[in-house]
Structure formats: structure tokens, C-alpha cells
View 1: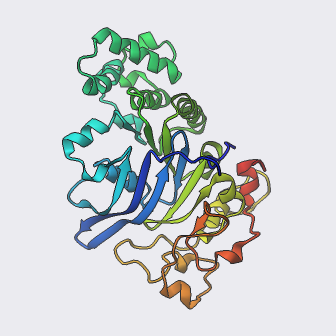
View 2: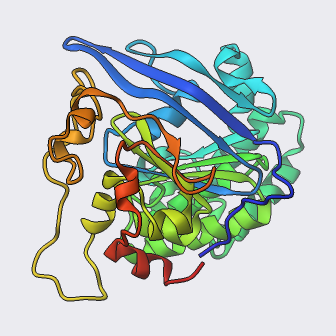
View 3: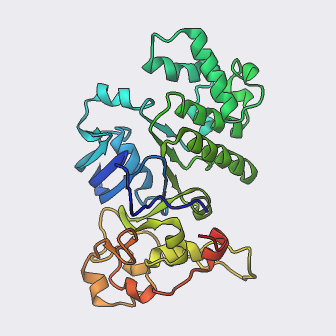
Amino acid sequence: MRSTRHSEEFVPDPVLSINDLVVEFKTDDGIVHAVDGITYEVLPGEMLGIVGESGSGKSVSTLSILGLIPQPPGRVASGTAFFNGRDLLKLKKRELRQVRGDEVAMIFQDPMTSLNPVLKVGFQLGEAIKTHYPKKPDDEVKERVVELLRLVGVPNPEARYDQYPHEFSGGMRQRAMIAMAIANSPSLLIADEPTTALDVTIQAQVLEVLKRVQEETNAATILITHDLGIVAELCDRVIVMYAGKIVESGDVYTIFNAPRHPYTIGLMDSLPKVTEDEDWLRPIPGAPPSLINRPSGCAFNPRCFLSQGRPLCREEVPPLHGVEGSQHKAACHYSEELIGYASKFSASATGGAG
């Protein structure tokens, strides 16, 4: 487990500060409230994990601030996203293009389709550099690309430079995408489900590369995933999202060892445990709510083991409030009833370490 980033003596200014972000999509059936008023920050050098089921708003929240959602039907309805003092949501398209791939970079979840199949890998990585630094000599660009391929663990990078994507395995393609993302030494790196299309063995290798790159570049990193094991291994802090809202946030050790939201507990307990014999998994009952017609009150209340039909859960949206110190927050009316609860996932995920 990595140490948490919090310090009582000094907390650096955030690299990215998102406040009350609302993102909507217009459909024939109505307005989809994909992201509903989320607020968080990312500090220099830390890795922030964002977890949740599909459709919870994890990817949309980051894609929207970089202008990467289709508009229309999508739109940022309100909020701010300050990056190094500038609100990304107020930048013109040309200005935002200068930020993307240079100061902020993104690793997408499907390396199989992210690379152009008819262009050599070295050329594509070099293009990421030349786009932002067009006057850089070609020999320096090639030297930088080979250096990047070597950094992410691509064997024989000089020869790989002249190969096409189909000559790379899935894991190697994702390594190439990581190399492309860090080509211009960004201060913020966003990894959106970076191991989704890879088998388990290759996943572990790619995650090790991502961890090493993050430590060497000291870039602030947002890791979007549904895999709690990855979060426990790599991240400093974690945000849990449900139905477009943040339902719990805090440092990784606290979240896994003292969860204070029923959804977080449900995510942990629905995973298979290698430390004990179980005849079946314990999934969260029901399905995520419609983002067009949300249930009244707490969106998780129809699936919640803690709600038990209590009126407050059905009628009032719970605020995200501090539960154990200022850094641990949960959006649950009855979070105090979870004091002392230990998910069976916590011990195996964190190894009992702090």
C-alpha cells in the first residue's frame, strides 16, 4: 500500500480542482444526468482512483473537462475545472488542444483501436511530440521516442520504432500508449480503464509500468477503474461514484478498512475472496438507476441494505459530509451505523498494512 498524501504541515496547491461539475446528454427519452455536481481535487505527485459501476460517470467526468465528449448531444451544464490556474471549461477549442497531450495527457482503455493501424508506432509517438513542438529536429524526436519506449519496457525499442501496431501485442500497444501520453512530460495524467482489454498477466505488467512512470515523472494521476484491487495497490486516495455523484472519498487505507457508505461495502463484498471458501458471490441487488428518472432521495436507497425503507433515505438526498476527520467523506444519512464495519475485502486488498 502506498502512503497517503495528506500532511498536517503542508498541502500543496492542487494540479486540478473540479467544483460542482454537471454534465448532461440530450436523448430522445430525456436528459441524462451523467455527472451531477461532483467536486474533487488532484494534488501534485499523487494517484487518485475513481471507481464505480459502468454508467456511474467516472469517464465522462474527465472526458468532459478535456472537451472530449460529443457536443451535442453532451454538454457541460455548469461547474469549473481549474488546471494550473486556468478553467479548462472556459478555454477555446484551440487553447484546449494545446493543453491536451502536452500539459494533460490521457491513456485510453482500448489500445487495440487507439493506434492508427497504417502508421508506424514510432511515427505516431513522434507525432504526439511534433504537434506541440513542431520545430523540434527529427533526430531529437526519434531519440526521445526510443527513450520513451525503453522507459515503458518495450524490448529492443530501436527496432520497434519502425514496426506497425499489428506487430505489437496488446500489452505492448498499451505500453506504447503510455509512452505517447508521457511524451511531453504532462503534469496531469488520466488513465481511463488502462487494462480493460488485456489478460490478467499483461494487466499486472502494464500496471507496474504505469506505477513506475508515475513515480519517475511525478505527474498527478487519475486512475479510472472498476477494479478495487488495482486501487488498493496503486492509489493514494479514492473517489467512489454512483449515479453521477461522489458517494464516498478518502485515503485508500481508510476507505478499504473503514468504509462508511453501503455502496462502497457492496462493491467490496461482491468480489470473490481468495482468503476464504465461498459457495457464491454476493452481488449488489438490483441495477443502477436511470440517469433520466432518478429515484427520489438517495439514488442508492432501492439497493441499500442499510436503508430498510426508512423515509429519510427515500425523501432526502444525503450530502457528502465528513465522517472520520476532514478527509474521509460519505454521502449517507446513516453512515455512523457503519462504524466498526470491516469488509471482508479490506484485509486481502490492503494486506492489513497502513
